[in-house]
Structures are given as C-alpha cells and as structure tokens.
Image (cartoon, rainbow, N blue to C red; front, top):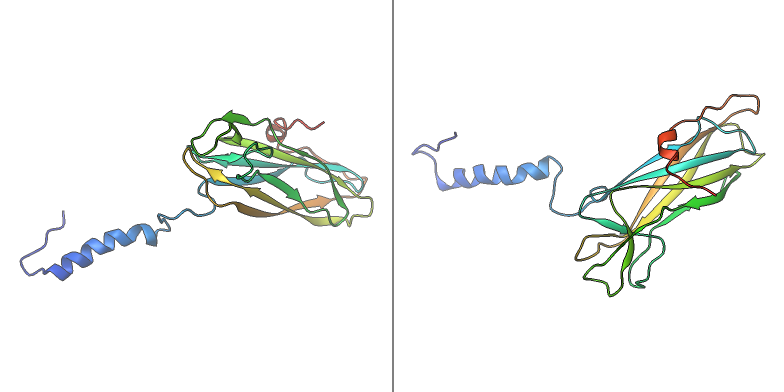
Length: 190
C-alpha cells in the first residue's frame, strides 16, 4: 500500500488521486456512449467467390449489448426509428432480397404501444445478383445499417454504420466453395 510521508503535502495527494481518475480515459474508456458499445456488427459472405451472373449472400451478425435493444424494421410508434439495411447497387450488383428475422414484441415505458425489437445476437442478410458484365477480381460491396438503440427507459440518437465488404468475382470455370454456413443457416431467404 502506498503511504504518504510527513513530507507529502495536499498537492501531492490530489495529484495522486487525480492520476487514478484519469486511468480510464487513458485506457480508452469513458462515460459517454460511443459507437460499438451497444451494437457490434460483423459481416460474412456465403461463398469464397462468385461467377459473373451468379448469386452471393451477405450476412450481418448483430451483437446487441444486454439490457439494450434496437427497433425492428416495422414499428407501430411513429416517433422511433426502425432499423434499415441498405446495399448500394453498383458495379453490376443488384439486391435480389433483404432478410430481416421475426422480431420480438416488448412493452416499454417510453412508448404507448408494444414495439417490435431485436435483442442479443441477430442475423440480417441480403441476397445479391452479380451482373454478367461485372469485372473479374476483387470487387467492393458498400452497405449501411441505420438503427436506434434503446434500453427499458429511453432511446439513443439514431446511428448509421458504414460497411465496405470485399468479394471476389471469378471466371465461370473456377470452383466456388461455400463458407460461413453456420451463419447462413439462420437466414430464411425466399
């Protein structure tokens, strides 16, 4: 245990205590909410490549901090922000389908109606059609996810996360392997 000697003065004691108060800030912690604290998102592709004219799926694994939820895409409360997954259709890529799982229904004190929400780990997905004219090699899929995180009492300001997901377009003669099938088994595309 650190003990102050009789030579210590009040200023040394204050500096010593202040250094402990600063440690969380030096380590990157703070009391303010930052992106990634309530929601963490990882992206996955269904295949290690795609042929021109082929289909590839992308999954978004949401990990929502316990005690929090995000609003589902369909909401009965007009004052809240629903989550929205947007995929940019460029570079000969077209969105064939977006998948949102069935949300949970919960009642909260801040809303007069029951809300459709996601809690815990949730997988969203998109099925993409790659055009015949797409350039072979590395391509980039751009996506964004708009969400509003809430706890049992109140909601945060909406946030938008941006993603750039690389995918490989291979010749029609190349073999394609399915990957991340444990994630994609959770998606129920039509």
